Image (cartoon, rainbow, N blue to C red; front, side, top):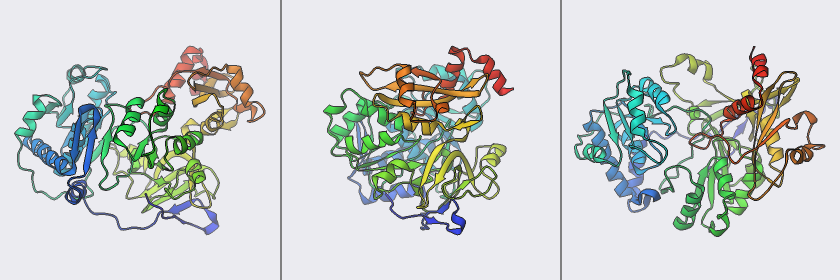
Length: 502
């Protein structure tokens, strides 16, 4: 974890920072992996508990080579595209590294996708091969694929089912891997994403531990305890689920030292609990997007707890960050605006969609994140919300993140999400979805009484809904648009919604 401080532009104290300038590595993903495998061949590289798999770097490198030869045997070459439609498994890791070895572009397909969405991905991505499991406890992926392909013209030539003779046949009938040059600038991954996603920084020589096919709070706690994990990462909702699990108290977390919380705004109170109750004194925050991989800003393990719980860190090396006002100028320090970033981390663009790319990345190379933020005079940034999530109630601007942070201080609230819903008179009003802590009870009036006299009256939620969980993506991202749909439908707000969009 880095500890360098950003360079802060002092002219007129504008919200601009540039991370430390360090030489960028010119290794490809495969070259970096091969060097690590050669340096620590006997060190554990991968543990997949639900598949009973444990591989050293030496063994992982051998399996990656076999998989790469298998891909070559299918006729895949550099710049071809292959899809993986799967939850966590050893085959996913092998495909990621083998595609990088071959120069094949790996297309990640969301395991939650069904026929309509999959059909679009098959056409749009131009993948020539798709790797998947036949089924899991949720659905039959084979049936979904068959439905998605009906009447569709695609470039898909190979369908390989993991855990079957398909996979075994592929790796046993491999071909020589072409020796063509693969550049560090080659596209290696295409992600069809529905929201902001931060990516964890890799630590050279560290082993990766996959507790379950998809996130499971208990499986994660068990894995930390049994495998003596030293670092943990996830989105805030995962940490909230772990902290709130009834069996949390019976596990030993003293092996943990550090980790990353990313992918969504981190509630300050949750971060404090992770630091103290999960024994993560060096827990860090990362902020980024799929379009800006790996991340834009990051806190350091050397930062004070206050810095780590109240900001998303400072600009990463070789990265520029600035806050842009509504007028398009760089905002003064402390003033809210849209966070923009520029540097090597900005994506090459949206696949075959130059118009969407032009909307996201301006002619000067700045990626417009759509996130509202402020910059402190020490170069650290604080995300204040999504610009599209801002609620305008009767002319008053309300930022959901601010209200969520306040409600997290309620002793009975485990998690909370604030959304704007249509109102015929005010334009919009505030709705709160609340998950209470285990064993706790509260009424709508209890929540409003807690708010009165502490926050402005117009911020107090008009609608309150107590729920057991929030609608989420497969990766744990909150889907606020689905909450809004529920509120409109169940509270009969359709007419107000029509007025709002007119």
